[in-house]
Length: 437
Image (cartoon, rainbow, N blue to C red; front, side, top):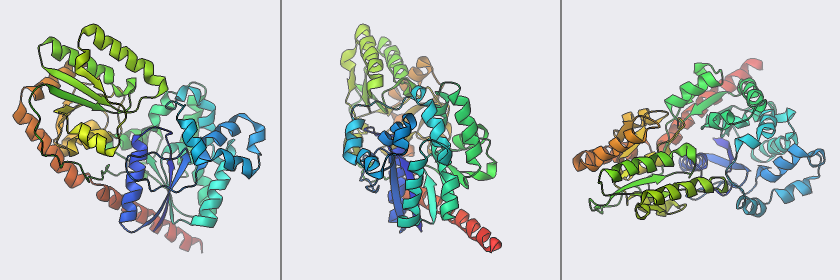
C-alpha cells in the first residue's frame, strides 16, 4: 500500500504528535508498506530516526508571508523554494517559541479553508506532488487543522483521506474571537469531506465526535504504540531515599508542573525525603513560568531537591526514567495522548495521574498507576505518598505497567490497526468507483 502521511513539524521542539507520526510511519514501513511522511511548516524533529521525506510543504515562512502579503501569494516558485529551505526553517525555529494560538486566529481559519484560503498556492504544490510524483492510495492527515486539504486531494487523486485527532481542541479553544467561532465552524464544515478520523483514545474519540459534530461511524480509536526497543531493560535497583519523582513533558502551565511542585512541598513539610527531577522542552514563551517555579522553590527552602535537566533525546530519556521511583505529569487540561506516561510505564515506573482525559482508560488498560483528583496538589501529594510508603504496591504497579505496554501498546500493533482502517476505506472507495462506472 502506498501511503502519504501529511505531518506537521513543531519547529525545534520534541512534540507528542511528531513522535507519534514518525513512530507510526516507521512501523508501517516495517510492515512492508510504502510511506511518505511529508513534513509541513518545519522539519519534523523526533528522538528516533526520522523517516520523513526531504521536501517540506506549507513551509512556515511562506505560510506566514502569504497570510500577510498579497505579493507573496503570487511570488514565483524560486522565492517559495528559498523560504522552504530545511536549513533556514530549522534556523528560524531556534528563535521561536511554541505556537501561541492567541496570535494565529486569521492564519488558522485560512489554512482550514484550504483552496479558499490565502495559502491555496501551497495546497496546489502539495497536490501536484502527490498526483504527479508519489501517487498514493491513501492520504493520512496528521490532525484536523488540515481538513481543508481533503476536498482538493480527493478531487485530484480520488483516494480515501483519513485524519488523526491529536489534541486540536486545546489549540482552537485558545483562539480569540471572532476567529475561534469561525475556525470551529469551518472545521465542522470541512470535516464532512474527510472519510474517517482516528483518535488516540476513547475519551478523545467521544469528545471530538461532539466537538466536530461527527457521526459515531466516522471516528475510530487506535491505541498509541511505542517502539519498545531499549525500554524496560534496566536491572538497576534504586535506593529508597531520596524518593525521586519525575516529570517529562513540555515545560508550560497546561502540563501542570506547578501542581507537582506544590504537591512536593506538601510532602517535604510532612518530613518526606523526596526530590523532583524534571525534563522537557522549554520555549521562550514559558521561560518566565519556569523561573517563577524556581523562585517559589527557593523561597520554600528546598531548591537542592529540584533538578531541571533540559530536553532529552531517546537514550537520555530512558536513563532519566530509570532514575525515578514514580512519574507524574498532572496536566491541567484533559490530555488526549500522554505518550510520556506510556514510556514511564514501559520502564517499570508507576505513574500518578489526574483522573481526566485519556488517563483513566490508560490506567485501566495497564494497571500501571494511580488516579487522583485533577488540579489538586493535596490529592496528588496523597497519591505520591501512598507509593512512597508502600514499595510493594510500587513494584506491583510498575510490573503491571511494563507488562501491559510491552504486550498491548507496541508500535507494530498501532500500525496494524491503522492498516485495517486504511483497507476498510480503500475498499469502500473502490466500490464507489465501480458504481460510478
